Amino acid sequence: YEIIALLKTNQHLNKSLRQYIRHMNQMHTVVSKSEEKYRRLIEETKEIILTLSEAGIITSANSSVQTELGISKEALIGKPFEHLLDQRIDTVGGFSQQFTVDRVREFYVSGNSLSIRAPLFAENKKSHIFFDLKFEKIHTRKDTEIFVKASAVEEDPTLKYLIKETLSFEMENDLFIIEDMVRRLIDDLPRFLDEYEINMIRIGLREVIVNAIEHGNLGISYTEKTDLLHTGNYQEEIQRRLEIEKHSRRRVKVSINLTPRRVRYRITDEGGGFDHSKFGHSIEIDEPTVSLHGRGIFITRNAFTKVLYNHTGNSVLLVRDFVAVAEESHI
Image 1 (cartoon, rainbow, N blue to C red):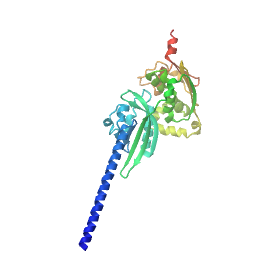
Image 2 (image 1 turned 90 degrees about the horizontal axis):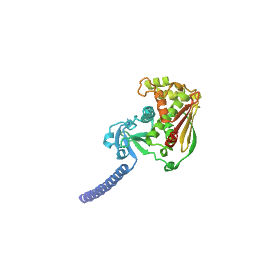
Image 3 (image 1 turned 90 degrees about the vertical axis):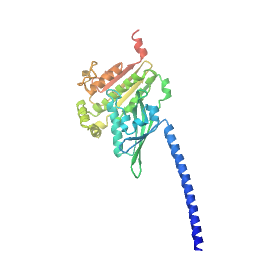
Image 4 (image 1 turned 45 degrees about the vertical axis):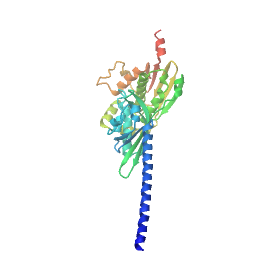
């Protein structure tokens, strides 16, 4: 009887084992199908999907980096994410991307999620495309990975029908929203100007708004900024001044007036102004003695038909005539 009982127990165990193996095989099939579905979903989406190490090194990428940016997946693996934040945007625009780089690095250290908008350089188009970037940390028992999704900012299709617009904005002293503001200010221009001309206006607007915040409302002199950037204390000084009530309550006022003939921008800060007369039209961009601010004013003046400061220097009117107006003036 004991032998029979053992045989029955063995049969029962074998049956249970077969059922367990069958169940595990089924689970493996389900998991494999799920993984395949997930891979296809990641690969076929138009959005750029990346995974990063905790230190921000790219560990994987989907095929959208090739279609959207003209960069192969293999070329990105092992490189820091900052590689995509190409800083060759323009002569004076590197500092703008540095804000983004600083914000991403801060997220690596202390954040769990981050959403920002930034331009990424598309090698296949030789131009910059704005993306909404979302970072999310995924914690496991072994380590921490960072999941990144980059979605190209879609243009409003109705803008191509726009012929007139007047808007006014009042900005706080937040350097991180400058790109969003500038993008809104140039959204209406593709109907009237080509991509190069719009990019030059973007550079000029960004330079003027940055100056309005830094040098106007926060009172950082050009010499101080140069020293702060050199020592690496720039962000700390910005934050320190934002905590001073006199500076923090100041605002930057921005207005746009668009007609079929021209676009006008008025940018005004609440600071003490500056002596703009010493920056003429004959600045040589490659001169090592020319300040970053001087170069910015030079580029701004070349991007617009007119650049008119008030006497104090804390308000500037930027005017860009469109081609039709320029042609009329020669008739």
